[in-house]
Image (tube, rainbow, N blue to C red):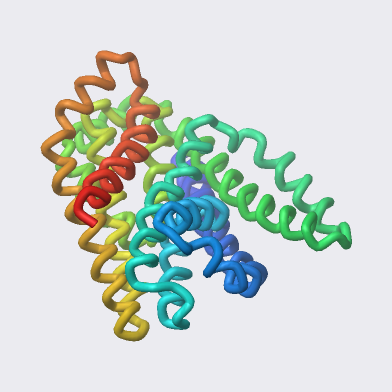
Amino acid sequence: MGEYLYCAVNILGGLALFLFGTQESARFFRQNFSGEFRNKIETLTHDKQGSFLFGVLLSAVAQSSAVAISFAIGFVDAGLLSMSGSIIVMMGACLGGTVVSFLLSLHLFEYAPILFAAAFFLGKLENRKIWLFAGILRCIAMIFLGMLFLDFGAVQLFRDHAFRQMVLEYSSSPVIMCVAAFASAAVLQSRSAVIALGITLAASNALPAVSALPVALGAHMGSAVIVILTGFNGHLNSKRLGFATSVYYLAGGFLFIFLEPFVHAYMRESGFSVENELVYGQILLALFNIIVFSAIY
């Protein structure tokens, strides 16, 4: 019983630290970059390509597509970004939000302690650019530290054969895992956290290959709930962007359902691991969403 409690503390603590890292990233980004970005919005978003790239970079640096979309909503309300431009930014943010998951799949979180140490000491320097870099690095290090604790707790927990078999009974159902991922993304307000949990399960051999893409799909569609909550608290244009983004996530997800069996079969034949299928499936889903709506928009 004591061993289970120890594992649970590591898993819950790691998840809390992961979410805290994403929240700190959003806070740090808003406080230190909003003014600088506002002065460059018009030059960066003068065309569709620039708007899309801006969304990708904003989401990747802020480590959250929800943060990037909330920025776009703020820019629309302030009149700094057109409605059509904000939709392109949102599409770029959808792709940029997969960067964190990709980095986690490379197991770079194992270097979290040294990254945190580097961020701490660089933050002591008086150069503003270095200080900003240290702030971003500190947020990434906190996310990675959370993943490190998650991974450690899960590995210890799933060494118990009976517990792993119990989890496999549920994780072997693609429908259950898709719904669970959707609900988790909505509750935790973080698609990356859900993918991180999926990576942890995959590394512990507790996530079957058949459920990898459904987890990515559920997390992707769960992002629509986050956007609705963000956009519907603002003005009319914010609500319109929130509605358009939620339709973007949900419609693209539903269309991808028809391709999921073929994508899964191809990835298995190509030798993708469960972990890679989860992460690259999320990236492929984002690209599919972009291609579909670029043809329409």
